[in-house]
View 1 (cartoon, one colour):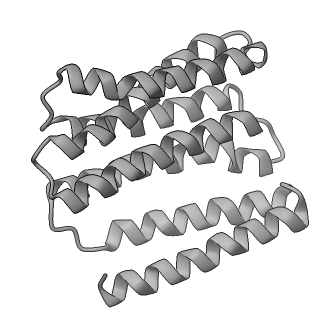
View 2 (tube, rainbow, N blue to C red):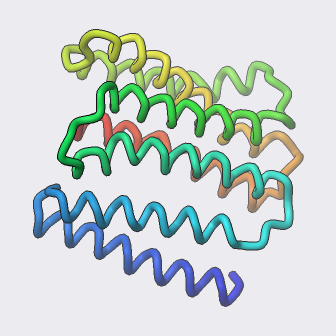
Length: 195
């Protein structure tokens, strides 16, 4: 790990702890939502200015931009005086954009075969179980939107895990990509339960 990466890791671990502290102190109120969104924005600007050696790294900026847009509609909009119509739908569309970007980046070098399908099955089963538990909360347009988002999330995670066998990325990078895909999947499942 380079010195710059170590510094950034330390800074963002500290900011993450700060976010958790604000959330604990303010119980998810406006100050904690504002801090959370500002940290996300600072992460985006940090990623934007960092030197990128590979095409995939450059494309990840687009995926991160979509997540910042999503967080605006899921997080920051709750700090505004006036409600924003359909903000959950716009937030979901941002995540769809992010997931589609990740599928494009990491799926380009995959041979979609039996192993890819087998990798997808656990994610679909976990999502299906979660969706069955939460379906009563998905009303109106949110019901089909949640299904579409869940399918795209499952495919994204499976594609990222499948990079281990693609042969395109180094083994270390492929395992980190796979780990990131799993963490992203479980994080989004956890977020669904907290909404």
